[in-house]
Length: 183
Image 1 (cartoon, rainbow, N blue to C red):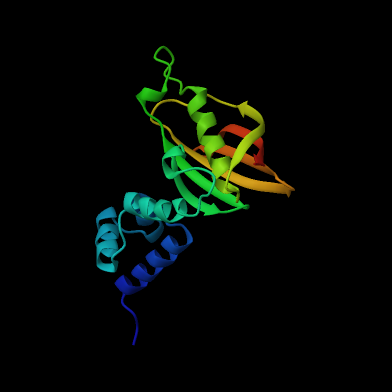
Image 2: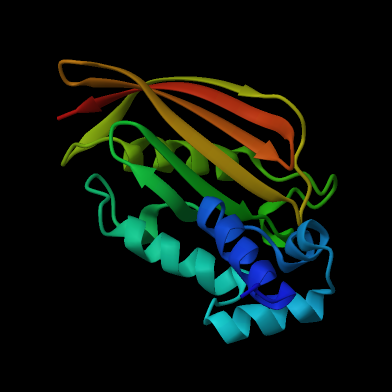
């Protein structure tokens, strides 16, 4: 017996979300060539929560594995974490983070996001930033979503070499290379 179009679409929806749980309903509707309302009905029928809830669920599971800092000290929401390998976090910027005259996000928010992700990704009980090499590439405006990706490049004795790249959409706005020291 042939599967209905609805069942095939729902199977594809599940496949897409298993590969990337952070796909928006808008993107899903484009990929599956149906309305956003159809996507929402399919998600409800399958028991799949909205994007914001999926992000919070993934973040909650990752916070439990962080050793170096507490959940409240991570700047942004931790979306992915593989200790001593990689991590991803996001931060929604707002008007409280900017210089009033230029509406550009203050650098210390971006640095704090990068440093806290560098601490979160390493498998150490206590660590400090030994060296930080930073480059702010383009200004970030209030309302833009920052996506930070961390990659542990090398571990030598008690030193962790961590690269952080922060993007707004597909454009890199910041990059850093940290040497984090376990103490």
